[in-house]
Image (cartoon, rainbow, N blue to C red):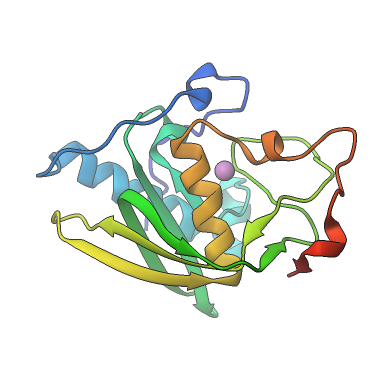
Length: 183
Ligand code: NI
């Protein structure tokens, strides 16, 4: 796998605050290539030797807007066992239902567009059902939980111009912590 030629935008770029637009099918060749590039980038970032070779930060999710494309597309790459990956591709995603239970990442969420330390917790649904379209334009539903549920919510936020830091109250970064479960 070659390192794809993509540049991940930093939070200071205003485009990250814009709402992405619904994708119209069929996907263009460029869209398909972009999706593959995003998956390859995340996969390489999760392989230690590649991460070091290319000086990458490890990431599990990426939205099109983070590489400057305002389309409602995101990918998540999950390492299911050592260097074996499961890819999620979501186009025009919609949260259909979600759990009452809330969770948060104890060590704090991360984002490839946020290159600084951020203290605080982000409340997320523990479980969700999300509908989306695949690359061929077929609609499907997926049920997710725990870290994948958080990753999906983080990426759906990106599609709406929201960064995880926006969900942290700077005055009370650990507000309501006792009402949620840490993962
Ligand atoms: Ni992010």
